[in-house]
Length: 143
Image 1 (cartoon, rainbow, N blue to C red):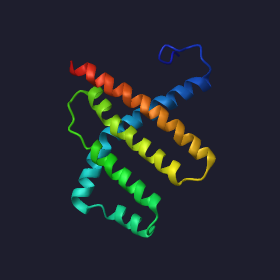
Image 2: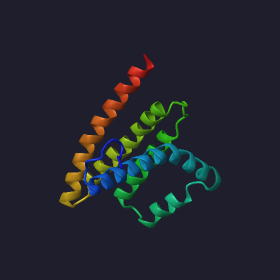
Image 3: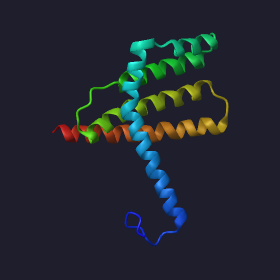
């Protein structure tokens, strides 16, 4: 039985493709839905959970930095949707990637594990490239 036109690939490869597609669909759904869920939750209960987490860790500067980065990302992701799924995706992914960069910069400042620090550097480079692409794509769509 063909799988998206790929009928000669090994079953494990097809399963991997299915898994990757499922992960991508979930990521897109999360990016588009999360700001509204968070906004609704904040309207009803405030940000009590976030404050208690910060209070629980006292004066830990890494916790404060992560909290500020998370707040900024979620605020920026709470955008008005255009009705165009491509544009909405691109607009939502920019602050999402900026949040990833902020988190990576925090771990570079405060983290100690060499593997995680290397991953953070790779994430920064990849996310910067993707942000540049998304901004260029959005600019072309506005013309």
